[in-house]
Length: 339
Image (cartoon, rainbow, N blue to C red; front, top):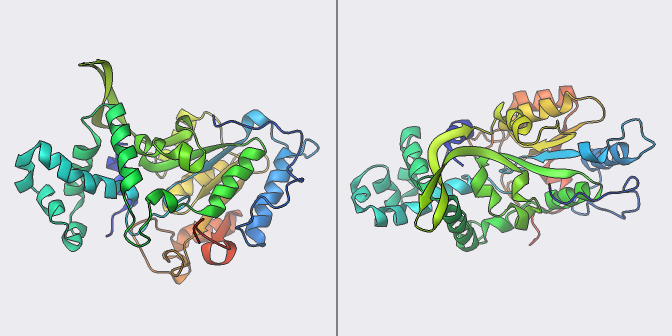
């Protein structure tokens, strides 16, 4: 299935404990065992030492140590379709059960058939109807509980595992490494903020208040048991492309020293990070391992895609501006913890 990330997130409605350290993390034997030795791993270690050594001219005070990570395609699998969109499709049967008249209305009728080819042909407007119907109209606590139940039960069709097991082990190590030297790690994603906050603490060690995502409006209302916040079909923040640095400013209030992404939707976040003074590190994952995960680009001659595009233009900008391109195939010893 092919969906344009930028268009989808336009409609998608969607501080971890910092460890005080006296100096750089030189005492750790190997904080990144799932990373192959090479320029990418070396750049990370060099950056950490440069910004956490009090004697370094690039030393960064604890309060300013901010690291931001995209989620889809950067921390976990995004192909062949974004996990949150799978959730939206899976919610349609319950929605129709509550409103039987929708069973004969498009695009709900098509989604109910389970015909993947037919669903893949749905346009943006039908997709918008599904997103709006499945992500809004409920109170935030009910939504959280529904997502928690789904994420615990849903299985990826390729690996037959929960989506939360399809997280990249090298990135989990990197998150822990950065936190061990006092960096606060934030998820800055085009996905729905409320959706990602449900599992971010358990899966990534990132608390909900450090998740910045595409956010929809909520309204304060009175329910049967008292005050509730109802999710409304109004977008407040499209946290993709230029929306990422905008969201960082609004939600974090500090420019990151470290940023990690994987697609054109992350370009502005990396540009914004590198534009700051001092030592700043920008990184991009290139999905070039079709055997262990997926291979797509179209940078470096890889197959084109509409889900997490890494274009030749983005690759050229990365090389020109000193961003580190991480080859999934060559830089990661293993991709998943279950390997």
